[in-house]
Image (cartoon, rainbow, N blue to C red; front, side, top):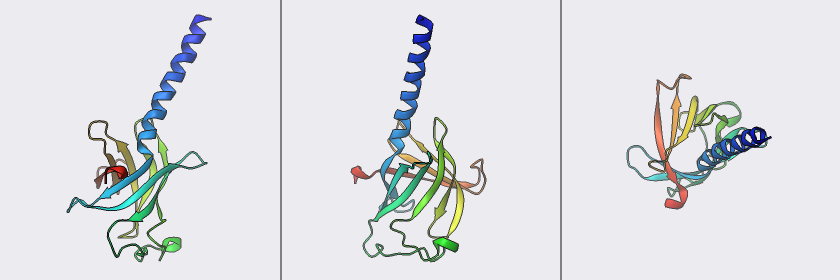
Length: 149
């Protein structure tokens, strides 16, 4: 009986720590321009009812960009407003990061493989978009919590 209790307890503790890690990824993030270091939008990362994770552009921070549309996009995303655009799609939590989904780049209209991880050391989110599933051919952006603006 003691062993059963111990197994149940350890399972609960490990699930709680995994949930605590994924909770750090969720919420509002300020995207940061690689070249200038300035924030240009607020992205909301959330878990949907299907169990997958998504990211939506909630607000543009640069004056004059509030009404931009995805002119480079194709299909159902063509001319869709950037604010409200769900550009992080179908990500799954692997225990360490979000992966397996795709990222839509509103500037180019292209989709990329995606990976999102949280750094305990810096408190920043790393979003990596790549041409290949392994992530070798791509680039990363580092975002900060929106409340740090």
